[in-house]
Amino acid sequence: MQCNCCRNEIAEGLATCPHCGFPVLVNPATDEYRRMIEEHRARKLSQITIDLQIFSYEVSAEGVTDKGSAWRPLAGASQLRTDAVFWSDLSCQELVSDRNFSMRVRMRCGDSSREQVVPMKPDHPVSREHVGVIAGDDFSFRLAVGNKDSYILSEPVGML
Ligand SMILES: [Zn+2]
Image (cartoon, rainbow, N blue to C red; front, side, top):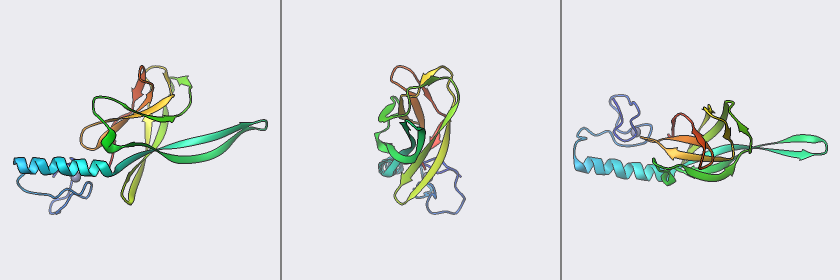
């Protein structure tokens, strides 16, 4: 069966959804139930932060030194909209290219977190200037790379 809140598949006989924690109830068609779903969704979204892995390099006379990677907060899930990209102030590199690349994101919720590699497949040359996020349905999002005028989107990524 499917969770009425996050739409993930869940096994029969469970009292709560293991993905989002919503109670499995039998009578989903009431206004009260729909209100519970909306409240649970909003509360859950307020707890989720999406981080982006950033790599840094130092350029000196000896050459380019890899300074390692770090996680930076990209967006809080409740900041996101489905009809407009939320642009973070994180920037990558101002390199215009149409070659495929990937980014690594981490979804944090309370004490748990999950990492995922997100492939980006430009269908036109894009500047990797800024990274943004747009909300999708049912606890999903897409990464945006580029700028307000020209950007590409990833396939949907689950937040949970
Ligand atoms: Zn769920």
